[in-house]
Length: 510
Figure (cartoon, rainbow, N blue to C red):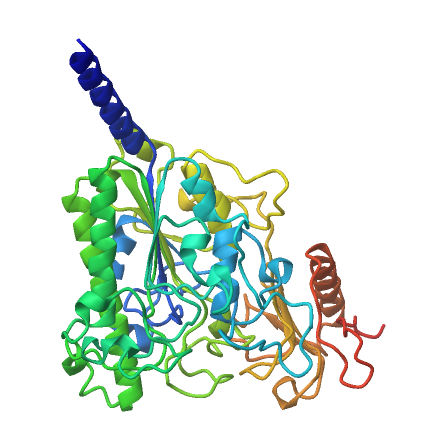
């Protein structure tokens, strides 16, 4: 009798776990490092009618699996990230703007890189054990939480450098740094003769000495971890942040021939191979999820963490993100606009889970959104809510994902970078609808010696015509919005090199 009860009890627990796994959607965040909105064959920019428009860079890159995902789901052409990586990654995990969580620069693993006049109070230590994170909230509610790829959440000596201390059940390859020592298995991904404190990618010893490219090794590990979660009957959260396409621009030999006759310099060709290898990873993951029978119950979010770092042209030119101006690290749209696609892995309008969030297929969303919106959106998909005492900047994406316009959604976006040296130093960007102002704390030649640059992205989407002198009234309105946003988020500011006091943005003279 006892054996019978034990067997029945185990069967009940097994069936209960399967039901839980089938009713709680699985979630994948597929994050690409340094991939801008133009680094793909799938067009994200639109014409005046809101239809996708193909530009020369779209014809250069090869991303068939992004195209595949775009047909299944919805893509955004106005999706913003922070201008460098660590701020975006922490915004995804916390739902907070970088101005609020104060990791406003990429995190140097071994030394505080606030810059010569950067704010002493900025959050160089990044995420800490015990912080509210998306992974920890999902973990506490029955999800198997999986991290595969680049971490870059905290410096080397701090607990947050290991994603396992931030709510992930599994951490494969995540560490304190952002740039891999090497993409090549033959070079052990940077572990050959690695110096202490180097960028040797951990956890991938089984591939050392092989021809397995880093993006492929990570994909194999991600697929294995997902298989394990499915076998255990648990819903899963896969956070899959590729090291690609960050420098070093190691050419992926599988795709090199596709760009050999492009006429572009070797580093740009190598960058394109990294893009194509990342896209292959996306396709392999989609195929694997479908083969496991969980495609209909899995939602995937694909995005980049900042603007493009393609080695084409200068940081403030129309070059690597053409026709957009700027690149990673800059205050122009090429530095902050990133690709974003959301889709069910296997769309089925009759699936009960998908009926709770019917993502539009083959659609383009032109309303603005940002990386911190993923936090509340994923929580709602999982049937959860953010803790009441956790300050939140993100807003739900549900209406936008359905292809609708959200009339209640704020149109403002704040990007705060009080640091140097970088491609753009000591600045804050504030967008309100189609209007955008850039405030330069210490004016340089880039800003024409002025504190201000003002653009109308509706009439001038590529930021060629500065309207500071032509529209002082609009400049004043935007600067007031910027100051209000910085104050609300309790931002910290660069310091005056002479007085050593914080320098706050100044409204234009009346």
